[in-house]
Length: 452
Image (cartoon, rainbow, N blue to C red; front, side, top):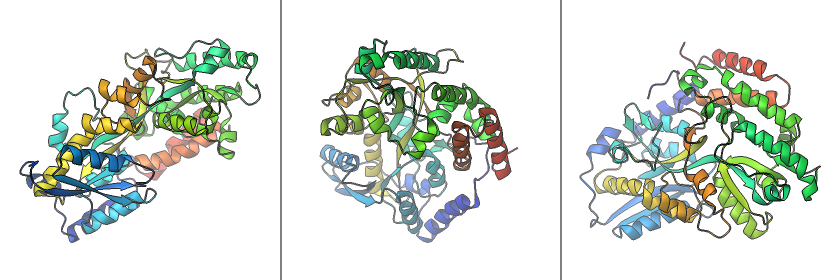
């Protein structure tokens, strides 16, 4: 994977170097050493491996995966080591530095993947990645680093369009479909705004849509759907591709199809409440919200209504793709470079299982979106009472072309920080989309993180 960037900041460079230096002091082996230490998985050998997780009381996926794998392989015990959810990366970095990292550990986001991969703390698991070659049920894009794979995705949330079926039906507006563009989205919003009051919804508090205040709601859709690579746009600080997306977002604010950005941000509007209490008929959001909505409707925190998922609307300035394009962010599993022998073999078997259908089915039972999605996994995910169960929702959840929320590069963190300020300045009207994006380009260049 070739990146057109320099190291982002001295802090990131020091962090990576510190991990490498301290891992050496702690006796940590290289990825090459770890890979060559495995002599094959022996299912009859009594083996114990450690697996990192966080917030175990509120995040059942870690223990669920550990227990299910143990059930399939009774001679392998997977002990889950709890970390702080907020300080996970800091604590894991410290463990890698001292050579005390678990045998298997999640990587929360793809930016950290680059740092960890360069730290010599991760084993090369290209052999597992090779077993997925040509597999249409899992996407490994972005994981090849310097010709090797150091982690693989086990869960992956993508963005879809949640919509309130009852509101559409009562207003007499046609439901979203897989051919919608953002222009169709706006057209439906206009129709809903006109018809919802007559259907009994308060015109002053109920909106056709809700666009949350995160920068990704505009910027990541623009990057995913602009038709150009991140190498030639985002990582070159050419943000002009975002301009039409910002113009549309501002137009929707002006027409009062959604709460304006300033109100949403200042009042800390919760997207769960906005959709869950029927204050918005449509809302682009990540698939993680499906489990939340089911739970909140059961607890009474959200109102009871019929809902569904549709593919994210597509870029009206481009030819409609065969498969809807959206964005998302995977969570990955890596193996310690210090693991060897049967521990390494068992860790690899666990990662292969967890990232494949076996682990995917266990996650789907929890209404957690796995990275591996086939028909059986889809049926399992949509089986809980209260979950949207129509075929259109199943297709929206399982059939899409997912692009990364942001590119895997060391400069991404700095660029995203600058673009966060750009987002607020544009959405509040302090700067026009054109001026705001040009200023962002200059600010990124001033940081010196780009290769000219």
